[in-house]
Image 1 (cartoon, helix red, strand yellow):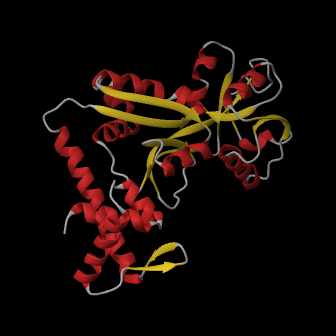
Image 2 (tube, rainbow, N blue to C red):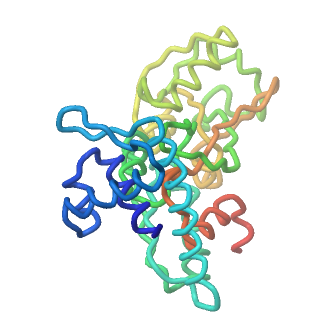
Image 3 (spheres, rainbow, N blue to C red):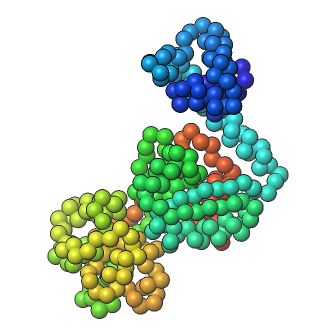
Length: 296
């Protein structure tokens, strides 16, 4: 049994079409049919059944598909590793990240990666969280970087160090001289929020409910940059990841304040397709994201 036969069968199950499976492998539909017949003859059982124009696996076919997919992924990974032995890292790497992580945290990793692996064609794009998940599932990107990562069907999450959340306010704000406050003191404060529905705001709303806090939401935005500008002019306070405001704090445009009762964090993670092998270049990028100091 050849590895190509396993691929044809997997493509057939995933596409549910003899014509699409044939096109994916540059062979004829009759060749696909013959390979399926040979497999069913070998195992003496039916592997596929027709449901109208759709092809579906039988229970035996589903088992054969799952084991074949594992073999194919292992084979593809082996090919990548063999090609990388004794050679400079080459190839391409497509990374998508949400804006807040891309603007404040990836730049150091990108510089280190390009310095260490100059022959790799690295493409980084900024996108919204939902689009990052979609592009990852569709195979448009190799790696996605998101906040509050959620395991989904077809996606695996690789955890990254979380960002600490802090309160920010204008230097003229009454809270500006405080280094720490009880988060309950935000009750009734004018607050600049993320748009409803964003993962960051859902997490903050959960914290507010937990501590029985009702803030006076005066503005809502879909990005940290606009939130920071609104806080700078004294429109209200906000809670944001620490890495996103270090420059403004150093320049005296914002004040950062910690919390006395506990520390709050924004989880980060890399998402990859469960059915796709992780290339050597992608693995190196993941290592740098998990430990940015390693590349410095």
